[in-house]
Figure: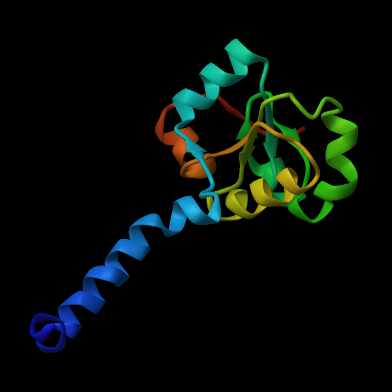
Length: 135
């Protein structure tokens, strides 16, 4: 008992750090894929690449084959683009920050296999994968 009273700060720090390690698992951590893993999922599992950036960003350059569904329109447009909720969906934005939020939103719609590309379009370009502009 004497140990606990003399080292309560150390015990508190140990408990807090342990909680932080398990926090992502408890929250249902969002998964992300590298650009190369996303291409494999698209090719092997017939995954659909969804770009959630706004129209101007999408027109300036997007991953080849990406379908444009702006983040603000996911609830209404995604069910028209991807009808089967078991289809793998890969979400992309500019850097990966908006894609994480979009993954959660898409999962709420009932889609079961949804991941974001880590680094977004920037990561896609870094991996030297094809980018095209809208006409």
